Image (cartoon, rainbow, N blue to C red):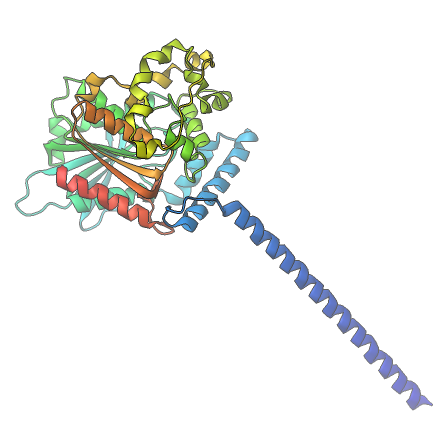
Length: 439
């Protein structure tokens, strides 16, 4: 009787353990299933956030999507900080860039890198090691991009570019660290760049760096291309500057804020890195304007037919005559009969040639040096560069327009891991090749 009871208890215990084990297995399978569903959802959401429909001609499309997703996520985080009124979103974004990417000057056997002040403006100077029997070197004043608000001459992107330029060209590269939005606004970025360039062009300063006064170029990308073009125009009018620039080289420059509906703006409205709305916001930030103006500016309400201040500039920016048919395609001009006159009244700098060099008169274009302009098909700013090239050619200036069908805005600085693009290497090599042959 006792043995039977003990056996019954043992069997019950086994049954209990079996039930518990089955329950645990079911819970484990349920947990695994939930985790799988969650992981699938996260992957789907990530893919939805990252994926963008891109033209079939764009090189490295998935890399570009990932780069753009990173930019958007960072911008959204900074915008949240801005909305909470903790700090300006551009200040936060630059803090992030500076924290992770700024480099101290680090010389090597072949390149000496130093930080200096040129008439109160910070610069980073890249000097190749002296070569036997060499007397004077050529030089490039380089101005970084970033919408007049972001990046730095000291980030790895621009440090790497200028170091490679110095080595490849055996040239002294002066990279200008101009002040940024929101600390300053137009025209301070222009003034910083102009002051630094004029200081460098002094004969005694050129002698200090062993630079040939007849072999100096000014160059920049994006907003830096804007500043390079504006400074080049200003120096061409300044008789006090005896050492003139031999060349200018503009990399996908932003050159006007009159028309945000050129064919390239219409074609590339939502293109990664620099969508049209972001470019308009950069302009508003540059001028310390009101974001409420952005929707009107997107449809050209700021330069409608009833706004008299814009009348004299329209002929200088008539893309229907300035662009070849291959770029005009089937796009139509967006010209509003009536608009918002208060935008130009509050932001008259929209029509200032120091901010918008494309709007300068022909007499100024005639004074410009030999020019290189690099443009990318998948870029809202493509037509700015092409129209600038056409106006220079019409004024009798020798121009090289270097157009890349598969490239996007900003690509030239993306040549190092983790943003290593084939388009970056090709555009950079083409740019440096032109400088090597012409400077």
